[in-house]
Amino acid sequence: MATDLRVSLTDRCNLRCSYCMPAEGLDWLPDDQTLTDDEVVRLIDIAVRRLGVTEVRFTGGEPLVRRGLVDIVRRTHELGVETSLTTNALGLARTAVALREAGLDRINVSIDTVRPETFHEITRRDRLKDVIAGLEAAREAGLAPLKLNAVLLRGTNEDQASELLAWALERGYDLRFIEQMPLDAQHGWSRAEMVTADEIFEQLSADFTLTPHGQPRGSDPAELFDVDGGPGAVGIIASVTRPFCGDCDRVRLTADGQIRNCLFARDESDLRGAMRAGATDDELADRWVTAMLGKRTGHGIDDPSFLQPDRPMSAIGG
Image 1 (spheres, rainbow, N blue to C red):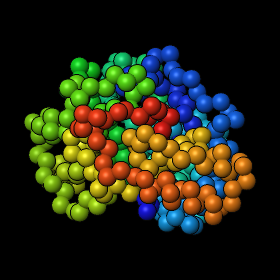
Image 2 (cartoon, rainbow, N blue to C red; image 1 turned 180 degrees about the vertical axis):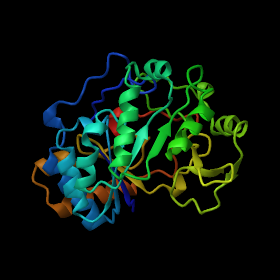
Image 3 (cartoon, one colour; image 1 turned 90 degrees about the vertical axis):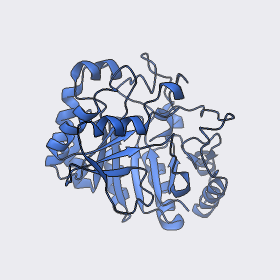
């Protein structure tokens, strides 16, 4: 059974990253279809007490736009599990201390460039300064280690890998490069246009000496490399070209209460409807287990029959 639960708290986002959604945004979920705070915590409680979940990561959309976030984090922390957050860091400068006091253990921040003009091109927002301020606030609040996630886009920031790594190492941040996945709302992803893990490694190796980290990878999706002998390191996540499906320990709960047993699943199991119809905790746990039994052995992106999920990343949660 999966032990790592990713909980999407909203499909809304305050950026418009070109590889995720169109400039005009998307049609957001109506409020009555989104799980309430109590419903979110109830399902997390079932996952922890009955299904063996030991880690909960809150995602979006952008989870910082969820008004009840701090209270949800506090109530989840009280269940005795590791809690983390994936965010674009907009607004993190205002909330980092409250999140740490609520029991949040660590944060992953998505940042694809440290050049203001490139940031604006990718996100369609001039907010890089706010992201950096959020990172600094998180570090001061004790939310460490701080992990950064970066996607390289051909023709946009594909030549900035070494620059971003140097910036992260100087500040003590842990950087992970992730291959762009077919999860954009526009369904415009192209394998031919994707910057591959091998290309990323080659770029970084031109400026740094990378050696395998040496520790067992386990369920961690990143291949870790020590940089110039350490202690700094960098990770490369080859989600497409070297999938790690066999070691995956994740399950996803969407903001509208659907269980997804894979990021690329074509089917979902509705817990919200059952819960609102009066299902007991045992009945919800049984539905959850049944959903996980249908998990495929791999996402099949390399297969000619692969179909991109109908939902984009912003609606699924990272």
